[in-house]
Image 1 (cartoon, protein in one colour):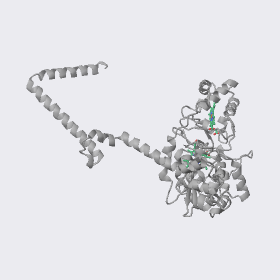
Image 2 (cartoon, rainbow, N blue to C red; image 1 turned 90 degrees about the vertical axis):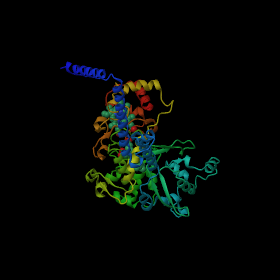
Image 3 (tube, rainbow, N blue to C red; image 1 turned 120 degrees about the vertical axis):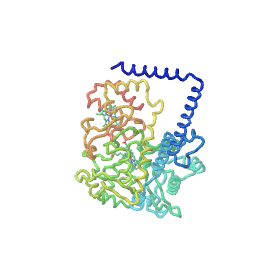
Image 4 (cartoon, protein in one colour; image 1 turned 30 degrees about the vertical axis):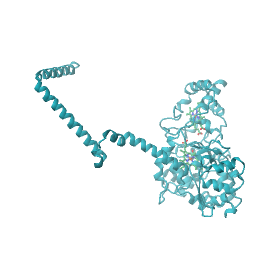
Length: 481
Ligand code: HEC
Ligand code: HEC
């Protein structure tokens, strides 16, 4: 059997040799050359015709076929598409309210509290100082040079709500979009993804700097901002609570937290009496991660549609019949959150670019000097070996490729937050860029104040027998991610 192909090929070779011998005369050689040339020409023509058809009739006989191939080549198409999607996604992430002004402005009338009585609203208004104090961030790159100079010279009154309005008008306040009347007062206000998932690098002053998209804003006091709204009746009705209760709930969140499940199940506090709100997570380093949110509600696009429709109150389409479970999600089931339809739909068409953008945001690298490299290297060996962290936090995404979910018992914590989600599990947290969101603590509810507390938890729960030095090395590794 083995010999058969060998024999075949050698007999082919023999045929070729005898053929070339029989074509010795000069005439015959010329003839062969002509036939060969004709074949090449025909082949080339056929190829260019085929390519031309694919490009449409107009380009069929384009002279420079090399350039032609480059312009219409699939690689280039894909590259251009990716670039366009990232650009579009950036704008949506930063500036798109999905029509949620109808909720934050028209319904809650938040804009009236921001502008204050002087501009026809209510109350004292929100000064830049107050805005910064509740964790709102200002993008210094949108500020005109004269204003920058005036701020530097202390000539801008940071107690004046008029300055806040000017900043909103310049699109300088991250995640806040204002609509203005002719007289400069606010007509309405909306919020964007950047409100919670962006911050600034404080290059100009605390709270004022260059945008850092994807970073968790752990200073942002969402509860304090919402409770500024003059008319919270819709929220009270939704949850079936009185004013005092709602204010108490909003006050319990504190900086860097928001409760995305409150508007599904109406649970505001954990059994131990602490707030049920979770920490705002980063929206970077998500490429390659299967399920998102602390309890793995879905992929990026599922959650984006969820948030844009149900939390930001934009106008779109959302379908998730898991929310029809009245036992688990009474508020959502009562209000039909599992099947939302709006016409026009201002969300669905934006989901592809929005997802593209988030997947394109890399986790930020830790600053040099923020961790000890030799200790981090030893920590990495422990992470992969003795401490078996990498079993779940699989590098380089640091979550499991596949169904990245665990029971509360797997990680030795209570099931309160897990039970507020469809799969009743916790998602293995991707660990890249951990250093950038240390304020507020770790795990979904910040129960561990420091990375050492996290390591101590695993050490006790999993009986890892780590020495104090090993624990420190492991922490240095976590800081290096
Ligand atoms: C009011 C603050 C707030 C706004 C606005 C907001 N988010 Fe979030 N986001 C959160 C919180 C809190 C969570 C965690 C929810 C959970 O796990 O239950 C979260 C989770 C996420 C996650 C999951 C991250 C991970 O680690 O898996 C992504 C992605 C995300 N948000 C993207 C967005 C996008 C895109 C928008 C705009 C359409 C948006 N968010 C608007 C607060 C916010
Ligand atoms: C059985 C799987 C599993 C193992 C093993 C495991 N983790 Fe985790 N880890 C998780 C899950 C799930 C979460 C999310 C918990 C939450 O959100 O409440 C998490 C969260 C974390 C966080 C918090 C991240 C954040 O953004 O707050 C850190 C840090 C962490 N793990 C480090 C480690 C280290 C270090 C080890 C090894 C000693 C380890 N993990 C072992 C599953 C695991």
